[in-house]
Image (spheres, helix red, strand yellow):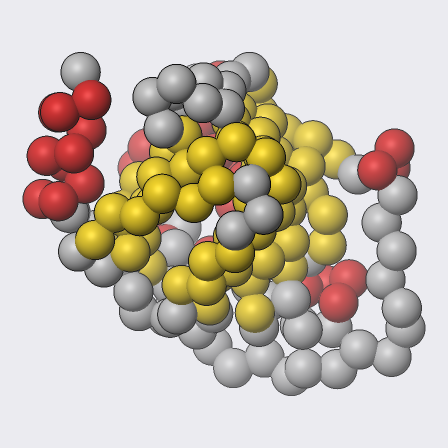
Length: 166
C-alpha cells in the first residue's frame, strides 16, 4: 500500500465548496483526499452531536491518524486505554494501533482528522453515508476494509466502556 508522496501545487479548499456527507448528529466535511494532495495527507472535519458515536474500533496499516479538537470533547480508544481529548488538544494515533471515538456523554465535538500519509477516505465516508441511508450494507463496509485501510476489530475495553455509559 505504498504511495508516492508528491505534491507540486498548494492545496486550498474553500469551506463553501467542500462536500459534506452524513446527517445529524454526525456530519463529515471532506476537505482534501490523496488525489488532491499527491498522497501527502487526507483530511476531513467531523462534527458529532451530544452523545454521538464516531468510529467503531479499527486500525490502519499504513497511516497515522491525527485528531485536532476544534471544539467539544471526545472519548478516544487508543490501544487498550480510553483518553478524553478537549478543545485545543491534538492526538496522533500511529499505524496498527486500535482506536475508536465518540463524544463524551454531555458534549458535542468538532474535530479535524488528518491521515498521514494520505489514504483514500472520501469514498469511505460516502459509503458510510449509504449504509446509514440503507443504500449499502454493513457487509459492503466490511468488504471495503482493504481498499480503505480501515480494519475493524473487537475491543473489550471499548465495549465495556459503552455499557457503563448507559
